[in-house]
Length: 158
Image 1 (tube, rainbow, N blue to C red):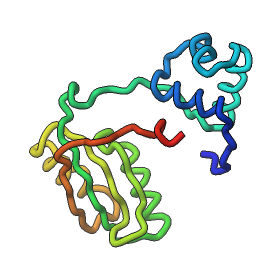
Image 2 (image 1 turned 90 degrees about the vertical axis):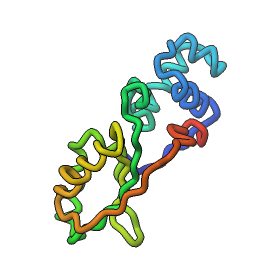
Image 3 (image 1 turned 45 degrees about the horizontal axis):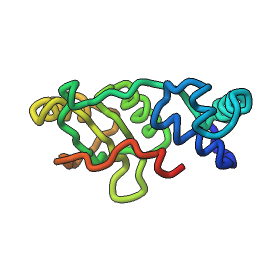
Image 4 (image 1 turned 135 degrees about the vertical axis):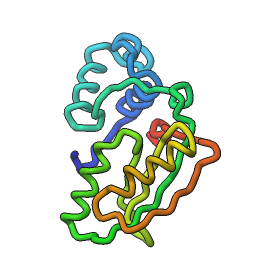
């Protein structure tokens, strides 16, 4: 993961916005949409990939159509916050597909996780069997989302 910020001009920003809305767009269509010819567009795209601005391409799925209707946000407090404990926790959560996001937090708890399951019963079992078994978990607090108002909006800030 690169930490150096890269300066993006208006064409780079246009490429990122367009790819955010259609990652399968052809180079020809992308070039037309951003107002450059095909060769400079390809060169810019390769530069953005090489610089780590574009980290990959993937398909996005509708979790509701897949039966994953239940979203919970979970505050996690650890019993140990030394580096080895944090690394053990990080490695363990990375292996659990139901955990969509994990953030180390500066505050009254250590981590905030976004969990997606089928329903409340599925989440209850997930909490008991998976979250509670994670390394160094002392306690958790769960907040159930009633509605997702906005998600996947990185393209709005570019």
